[in-house]
Image 1 (cartoon, helix red, strand yellow):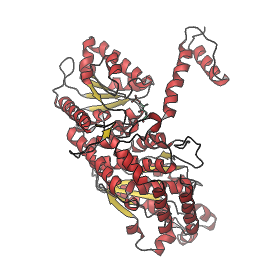
Image 2: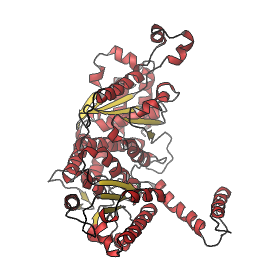
Image 3: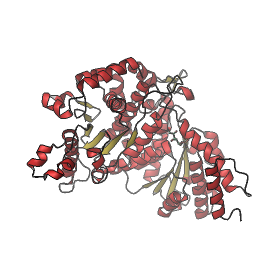
Image 4: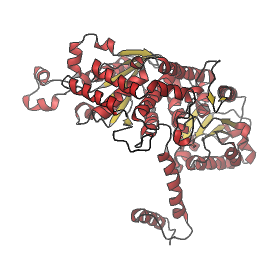
Length: 540
Ligand code: G6Q
């Protein structure tokens, strides 16, 4: 992080630190308008933050000192900014709807292959939805089971719940990710083999969980339908690895490809979105991409001070690095976004959970925050207590929609009233005087006062649609990118995930060895392995 620019942010924070959010609202009647911005179908009200003009100016200067504009261009134009894997980072090309767009990787325009895969996906999704593609026994497909994990699961799983109002309800989607056999077993109880399409989604097609689940699903299907040839009609693959796909037994003509410049957690708009496309249809999938694209264009062209992802990123840095906040909460007041916080968890924590700068030095400041959340109003009856009155600072993003897909009586007004009221209470608190005026006894005043000054952003859209969902995802993707640039870390690799993939393999060998071996782990791991083998009678 540029230390000179960061020191100026600290100085700006210090000079305004005696002013609360409440004071700042009192001093400026136009504050809400000043700190509200619209882009790609979203309105961001960031006025309830600990900011004034000088803090904002210093934060923008920090972004400038990090060459942010140039870094954004590097990403959009296919430079190999994922240097530890020597890869370009081009999820933005996947949703570039400009028919004249050219985006080169190693001198080759990638747009034609993106369009070709999208067209193939559209054709296949339509044939499943219309019943043209049938199962081995001639039945229509009624169940889609996506088998994938991490980036090959969370995006389509989240989006399929989010856009359920746009889905074909006669087709039911399931997502199997965990290697825990319970996950697969419970899904198989819900489906019929002759009407199920399995989509094996794996960039590498070597991931232990996915391959194990896919093999077991394949064995189940063959057993149920009594013929190996059934696999061809009931299994398709989404991968970058054609060799492994055909080694698994899926004909590569039933494979939808993508490329190494699409990171797993950024891959929903690629072929990884196939299960989602079957659910909502190619036209709605296109609308989703359009929403992403709108936010992409805003991010690429808007000035830093009027740029929604940049502002969210800078506010996050203000609290992480300026106030020591360790986490932030994302609180969607929309049941359809129930998986959005979990999706964001991977996007943010896998991208910016790094402690080494691009120069290979240990960072000397906090980087990726812990992200968490639940849909409102459930969270209010659970963890909001700590946000209101706990000792930790937890900045929150409140997300809401003016219209609901399911108007029943006055539910939606009540839902939104809760959203707005929470941001109000967090910012303005409740003083001892207010408590007294309400007749609270003196001994309870310390417990019933709320100090307020707790920062929130409010993100509002008219309605949850494919477009607004796409734009919302892109908003957070780019926010995370900006933070990575400012923290000078690589946001697009994930060596921590790779480590897990190797470690389990070593332990598995010891768990299943025919005869107990001399274990070579630490004494704790050795004892756990020995205990497990004993319970299962493997060393009897
Ligand atoms: C995402 C990560 C990780 C990845 C999974 C699945 O950015 O790289 O979550 O998506 O490990 O990997 P495969 O798609 O290769 O099975």
